[in-house]
Image (cartoon, rainbow, N blue to C red; front, side, top):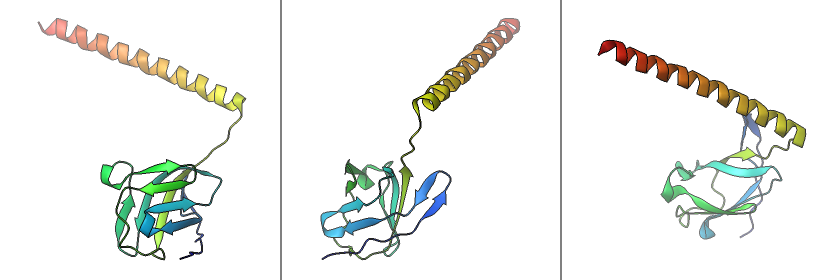
Length: 132
């Protein structure tokens, strides 16, 4: 049975909510028709009111093959026409220069964090020494 892809685009804090997709319930497959597809975060079947993909739950995970996700959750009793909400992380392309700058900033922040942790550890040791 052919199914016409759905389209609804709402941005939510860096992730996108719903994209073009084809749901084949009998094969437990979700094919995403979007070049920005990077990683599925959640898929919710609003017709049956159930989460059918959540990578943090083994029984609701899946395997990705390019733009197709084979779901672990048994969707064979569902319909291809069920309403789904698909939440995914879009691909973000950045230049090498921006990546290098971000990496340098991250390393700097980690050094600061390590310095703070060392200071807290020293303070804790000194406090214990005074108490003995």
